[in-house]
Image 1 (spheres, rainbow, N blue to C red):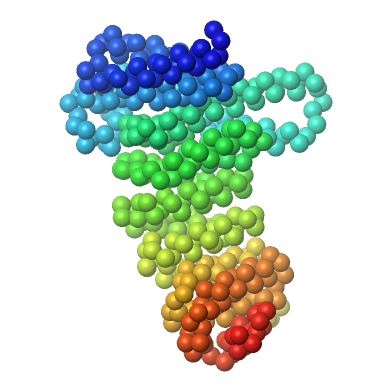
Image 2 (spheres, rainbow, N blue to C red; image 1 turned 30 degrees about the vertical axis):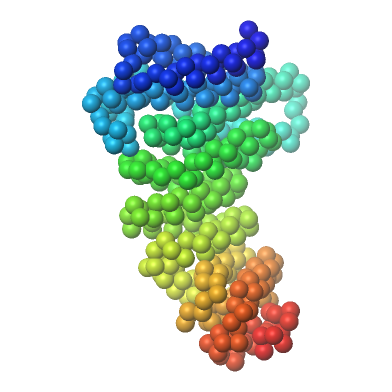
Length: 397
């Protein structure tokens, strides 16, 4: 069968199956869903991108119909769709869910490793050809999984598929930057949809325990993607996260301030600066006070010629930066001492110096309109320190 015809067949099946009312599905219709789903799962690594997309959409419709049929079949109300569906899904559903998600994380790691290994020369052409075939099959299967997730999140059917979607968070975060541009584009599209999805309990707990360990992922791009996800995830769930869960998330982000990758450290500071504007006042205050004390300790120790690693100093400076940039336009009582201490690190080597320069410049930009009034909150010594880091010192005199 030609790929165009096959893609149309799956598209037609999706349209037809959408018209079926899950609560009224007959045993024959349920059996047909099972057979169709078996076919779809077997065809996930099809050679045609058009067919893979149609398969992903058809999988979304088929699996959600089966889930909804099981929910309504047990007398569950529509309000119960956010509950633990694993307890009420019909026989056979666990099989398709495991078949779809089992090995997905390992598959993502394999794709990552293959991207890195392409820079190395192969000693055998036949081995290289065999590896390429396997890599292509892995990438095609993952593309189909992303199409399934995108279709689920776009259609609103994700409510009954959240247990499956959460188990696929790692591939989304880890495959946004690969040599396979099509795969990365799909991962980014799925990410944009997933990060706005509100997760109700018990899926919220599952998501937290699944994503926070990624702080130790060996790939720095995955750690950076985790930060992007946590920024939106925390805001979307601010009113349903417990205090301990907020603290867990905060500590995870804070750990990345001393990451061995500069991009991750700077990204973590930006995320903390945004979260300090509204997530939790007590957490923000505690972080601000600890950051100031640590930076002051390092500054005094450096004047005594004590040695610190660049990452440690940079992490302390970035923590101060997060505090300073969390209050643009305002001048709380603690800000003058924080921004002046930050400016004192201007003589440190890169990338610390550039971080200080950018942060102080941003502070001056956002406070320029009211500087004639706000500068009275500074002492003469603090103003002198700011002048030393200013390219136009006369304005801040």
